[in-house]
Image (cartoon, rainbow, N blue to C red; front, side, top):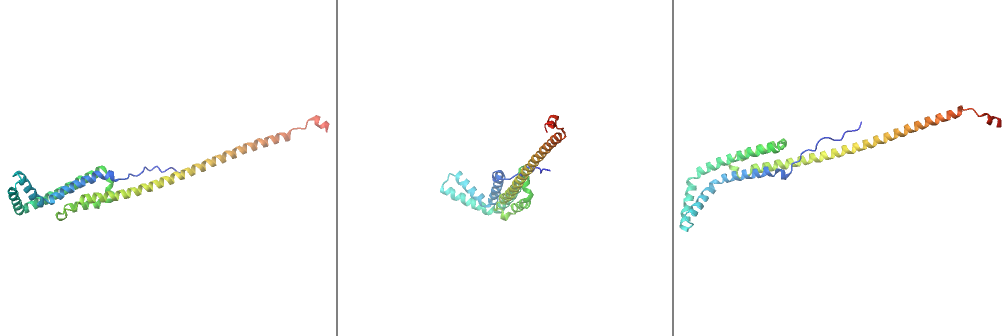
Length: 216
């Protein structure tokens, strides 16, 4: 019996353009988390800048505002650290949930080989002292890189198997065609031989005419 062509549909392949939305979302949440982690430094500085602008930008006002910002940074450091830490952890967790939901809705097969990477991104994003590391972005990039590599290899394998199946089918069709032609020729030869045998038998059974006998 002829072999059937490979009817398996081609596997899906992830590409970097398709991965771009998830990476952009990851970058946004990592940037917000980094901002909150550095709130202890940016808070007093921004307060001093705002004070200087509101005071008219004079040198004296700037000095006063700088001193006030420094004092606020010194005395308010524990509160700023606590606020920045809590907000960084909250932002990291929210980003992890949002990116995870996005991937589940648009590219759930990425978790087939990359679950540990995504779980690790949560752990890193919730550790205060290493909050400067863009854990979500790095993990999402690594997950997509691994997925693209695996799915490209799977697609190449599918292409090869499909090409081999089609080549085998063509060979089988040619063999069947040759067999049918040979059977048709054999049938024609059999009919011709039957007709020839019938004619020979007919002529052998006919009597010699009388006029030919007299002539002999």
